[in-house]
View 1 (cartoon, rainbow, N blue to C red):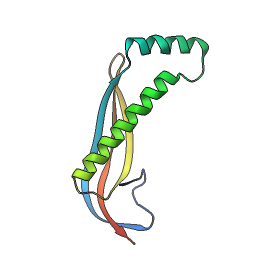
View 2 (cartoon, rainbow, N blue to C red):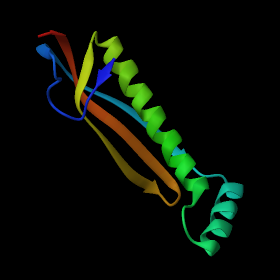
View 3 (cartoon, rainbow, N blue to C red):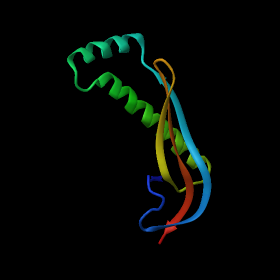
Length: 106
């Protein structure tokens, strides 16, 4: 599955738009993870515990979006974006979305 943040794909022609596809995941850090993050924050710099959580959440949302596009019969997703919203303290929704399309080589 080709995925691009642009609205076209070099070397391909979009033959059909299939609509919006998305992948959503909701994540939280465990109590132990929050303690580890608090300890890391005392020393400054990259808080790897939270970075890993954010990367896992984005990857899961991306994978779900690709699965949704595959189910829609897409060859690619264009205009792909991420969004994140805090649902409540410590709980975040991560959304990956874009437009599913059919393509062929130019």
